Length: 360
Image (tube, rainbow, N blue to C red; front, side, top):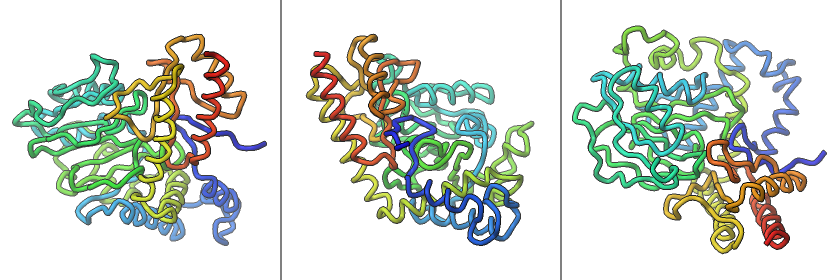
């Protein structure tokens, strides 16, 4: 069985090299006689795995010493509650709603205080990023929240919002490690790893130390307090040990590729192939305004539902998997994360050209 080109939005494609390495170590990790899946998270061997993973991530992102890296569970969705529980000291936060996940985070925050929607692109089906240069930031806002790359709608913040000095919190699930970031611009950067880094089950939270306190909202569970996990170095309870091990391998792979500068170049080159075709195609068209296009998630449509369905079915027959768009928008979506090889995008475009010729 040969491998398909997997354009899934998450769980998503992983580097083949990483999968092969994990397969080789499945029964015996480095002479321990057991799999990482079977290993105590309190063992010296596992301690090395999680600490090395953290250090490699710090190297890749140039994470300053006054930020903690936490490997947690519950997905990005659990952070929708954890963030207000830990950060809403004044019970006020400002949300920029640019897609379904930002909207869900905003709705969740309303349980814990006043969550103001200060900008939104819902008026045009989230097909653009609103101007965030001069927003009505609340004077007593504890933080300003964004979802930086919108997986479903294919938009990306190219410029971070002007938070007027307030702490920026960003969900980067679908653009994590796709390009260099200046961590110091954020109070919290977090993301589920199942899109661009590893298997489902791990969420990574990078949080500035001054935001980690015992002063959390009354009733916040021990497990949902950042301090619990920061103090225990992500080992308060059994972590998603195997998932973290795979993430660690992906970090090593990224270093080997030349780091995030190189990944950005590669991702731009890949995305350009697909966007250039969409811009000249008579049948297919992209759904996002040009200046806000994501490098990771590329939604497109033919304008005819039946033709969309036909395309997805024929694409599958030809080894292109998971091209159906999210149920909330329809059409198609190609997620072209770090591990998607450039030839996957080239072959997809070839197939699209052929489909267009046959269905013009």
